[in-house]
Image (cartoon, rainbow, N blue to C red; front, top):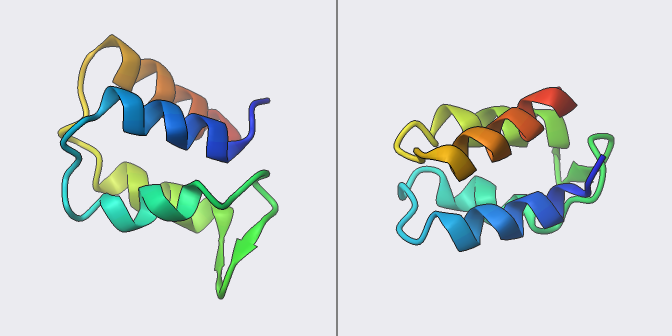
Length: 74
């Protein structure tokens, strides 16, 4: 399983104009390594769920693969 920060970097590369509501969660994911990490009072699972909920406009083959990878961590 790849680190969450690596997946987040791939998302930033593929999604050049992310939805404004997804940006805070994407930025936070850059600081996470594993699904058991905590960022202030939020656990990694919640951050990923919030990101996915706000990433519906992230589309295409890369988007599908990266979202599937994140969902597989939950």
